[in-house]
Image (cartoon, rainbow, N blue to C red; front, side, top):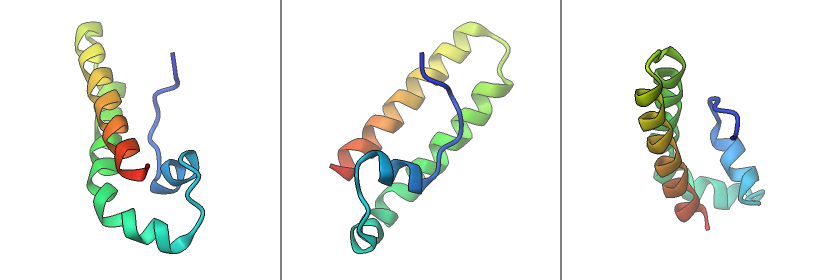
Length: 73
């Protein structure tokens, strides 16, 4: 199981091998809201006590991360 923590736009860029500033800027407007949603879900996950709800949030996190990955490919 991966560590659930907030991540930056820079993290996602590096994860997908995007080092060129022009390419980063190109994707910035497409992923900014998604990264925000991801980080808000992490906060919600950290606060949640119910394991079932935590699992639902984890599913949401995976979905958002996949959306970001599709954009950055």
